Image (cartoon, rainbow, N blue to C red; front, side):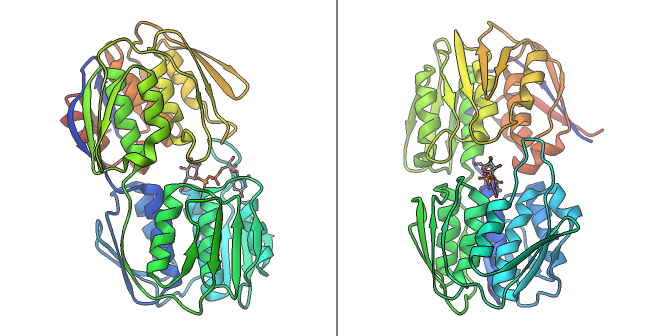
Length: 416
Ligand code: UD1
């Protein structure tokens, strides 16, 4: 497995182009299952999770061409099962459940099982499909669902769930009658998916609010659509500017989707200016500590919590970082501590006492965003940081070491 080696201490400077959003690309690719004919999806990032999604769709019989502009044709679906082997590598595979039941009347999808960042169940996806009239059974570790035709229903999500909202929105697009999703996820990726579905002929309103209304239609047609920029990748580079005391412009992003992060970064002492699709961020003075509490959009994203924690390890003062979305998302704490950070976990909150400097070390992380936080820590640490299990980074960051290197970081990938 590859390693990433960083010699810390370089201030980042320059411009970086943001790739397409993984978390928008995955449901959008899956939405092709609702149509026959060739769909074209532009700005698909080059990531391991996207390759997994391609394998999953191909395993169902779907035809595919291209990469960045990906063409998908699901007129032939000859397998209705998402195997354990695929779902265990990528939980988002559960997204095929709703579309397959809606279009084919049946689906068998492996339960994702445990996950490094908490239990992450899919009970709300299942409950909603049942409310739409599907018969859903759990058999041998698989969710087996069937319905002649799903019926519109009023569904209340007791917890805000992003892929749950997406799954049921896709299913409802082909259901008979009207579906109302209450306490729906408001994430921009949900909005991007709704736009794509409406381009296919779906009748969805309210995406981006907590109430989404879907008037089911008889059929959907193919579409050409574009995946939004990755707000988590953009946020990671903005934090990198802060932690290194650099001056970085992230290009091709949506600043409006990063309000919660930008407000915090300004509080840490950074100067931030944005235009329609660029954000420039720099820090000259000391790093002021800030408290952070993750929450569903428009709150502070849980997917940037680990990176923000890396930043706070070298701030002046004490920072309380509360994780409210996932119960076990502090695996990076142990590794950051090995680099000299002073962090104490109290329940769902990490108390980070800033230290003047952290030191490079061999580290390893067990999830995607935790790995990104170790890169950020490595950029500011004294000496060499060696990040193992780069596999996790490749799931969600396109050419991360090349992008950091172009900004002046001393970072390289070593093939092992
Ligand atoms: C998505 C994102 C992930 C992000 C997360 C929260 C994708 C592919 N992944 O994950 O990067 O970190 O949103 O912003 O878009 N829950 C239940 N029952 C369910 C579903 C969820 O209890 O049926 C709970 C989860 O355990 C968690 C919370 O709801 O505590 C939010 O999870 P959810 O929004 O579903 O996360 P994902 O959609 O898996």
